[in-house]
Image 1: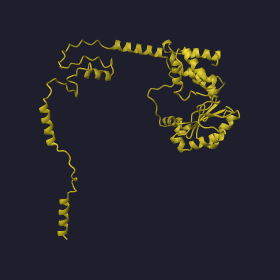
Image 2: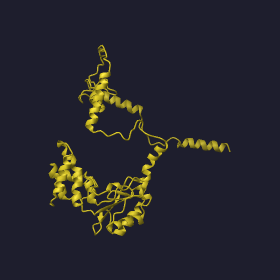
Image 3: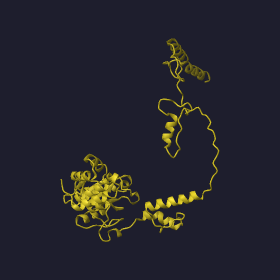
Image 4: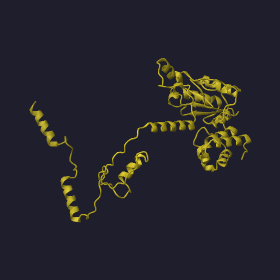
Length: 348
């Protein structure tokens, strides 16, 4: 088992402290990113580390780590190059981009080049159909790529450069990116100041500005309150509203009409879900049917029919519903055909 650095352990404690004491297992996702930031993938040692600090067993951690594709289960290159080969990007040439890179790099899906720089994968969808075909490098977008531009990007990466993504901040390595996904800021000077949104992303905003469309009463400068402040403001507003209400005279009690239902009283709608209320109303104890429930027929105990009665009923049913024969279906009757031929000959 590899030993994680003290910095990683300190960051793990910081991540766990973000969650309530009885919800510490919610820290598992960022912790998996954290161990990946040190080893470049989620190793068995990383699984054991997460299980140790969260008080889980390794099977529980492994089940999560194997569910999400962003957690790599074997050593991954500095740059994860993902090419979208789903329907839209594929129609626009995504598969050609992937095939060109695979041949050039000498690797297939989820394989890493011998220099440890590039891991190639095809992605089912990168959620950027309006920019297709797209590929990402450590989840930063390169839009509208073709085989030659994609080759240029990977060659610059292999030579030590960091090409600028079409959208987003400047590139970082997989390990650096995993630190950010664990919830820690990118410490590189001006790293998040680069890049910007693409034109298709801004199209809706530009149309809204052009036609003067805005949310009524929206002030973009309104500060975002904390949850405690919002709860306090809501409580104060509710108290003021209650104080402003005029005192209402009590309504006289109205006797309930007898319905004859055996169903118990059901609590108010805000206490139970509609499904629970319906189930309790229609079948209170799963044994006694409710007489007035829609579509319910209450069984009545009685003497079973005598054998002779059953035989009589069967005979009556057979008499009124004769079994199907093997005669020809309507339209194939031979007598009708012969008659039609004679009539045709007589009219010649």
